[in-house]
Image (cartoon, rainbow, N blue to C red; front, side):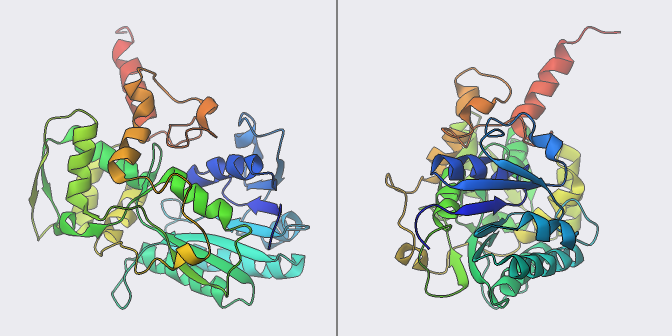
Length: 349
């Protein structure tokens, strides 16, 4: 598949989707953004350059209509944090996407999944992501399944958990997974692989691992964040008896992240998240300037605050994707800090 394509981005109001639409448009592709509530896209800077369609992955008819005339569908929606039984929701969603894509004659589906080891028990969240990827690969559609670990950028749920914990706790009693190995990837590099996947020549439908140049223990990621953020050194004390349930309650008590989101993220840390191979290099070349290292990725995520700028702004959606955007969740660090400062400055009643 070469040249420009007509791409549909599901989850266009989400963290990855909002930024990916901008990237695809900048590369000359036609883009249709899918959202359950298109009103949420009213203020995005690319609104006048992209088509916007109302659709829900749980509503097959809406997908069949939205997929009409589309070459490539980006599957960026998952139910973690929004559904009690997200595995069942994921299964229904992927079946609807496959059915709609077949009927509409979609040529390729690109899915962003999670890094995970082979042959190990996976958390419910990672298992559902793996199952969606396998369903797409087995569907008969051309499927490019990219598997990434912690995505580093302001607004990314995985990064925000690191930010909130490290900002608040100079000394932490932590579960044993702080010693698990992670291969984080900068949001700019995720967007590079996703955008290239629209036209990359692939030999078959399969998974492709993507990651940054560094492999670190999760605890080291927190220490590096503290150093880049100018915080005092953080000290971690691993306690093997801390279960995911206890850890999620603990995180819920010290961070603003919703428990329904925090627990699946925590459970996913029970195993290493490291690339098994670099096969992706054979179909998608790395970014021209090379992959961004973890320390630099953190610095980019904190750049706006480091420049003395508060809040989030649309101006950086294309040029600095690691910056916070107004579409990021309320519990994201930059927005949360602004709300706290605003509340502290408010006069007493």
